[in-house]
Image 1 (cartoon, rainbow, N blue to C red):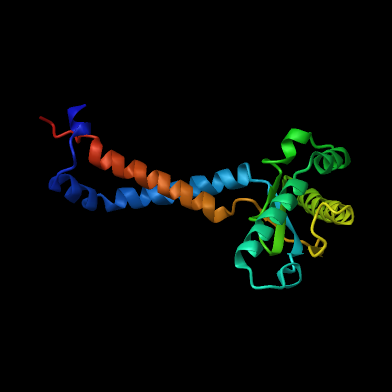
Image 2: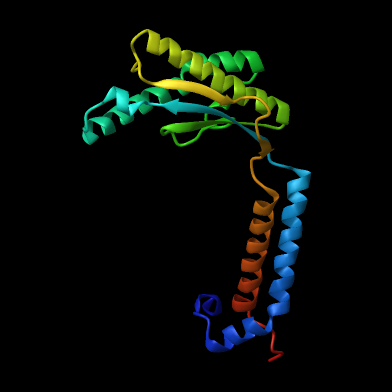
Length: 205
């Protein structure tokens, strides 16, 4: 126990450098294990639909009032965020795609950082076509709901939305193969370093 808690000495560091073959082998082995995990239990596919959001600051606040523009953007963005996760939208998607309500937000559906310009609607699923359809449906339902709120006067009339990407939307694994390779190699590299530094060698004495 004292050996493990003792800080590494210069001799330990030299021993670590001499064992470069060991930790290089560990890094390669970790990468292979990471690749095996990726292909045996791959992460779900992630699809992305895009909605262009234009707050039309020039029309909403024609005068040079930066502070008012800031609060306008913050207020309207918050309203749109709340609509994106509205219970009615989630219930509709849950009913159409037979996905439990609680599995949608925070698990299958994710919204990119809201700001002016492109809002990305991400959907995860083991089937790439389902992921794409779910992302597209979420984006389109969001736009329809926002337009209804604008007509009702609950959202500023100058806010304009346009679905720019719901067909042939990008679909890829939510975690790339490189992430698994990096995690596996880094994990086994740390393990190899730990073994060399903190496992006391048997000197035969």
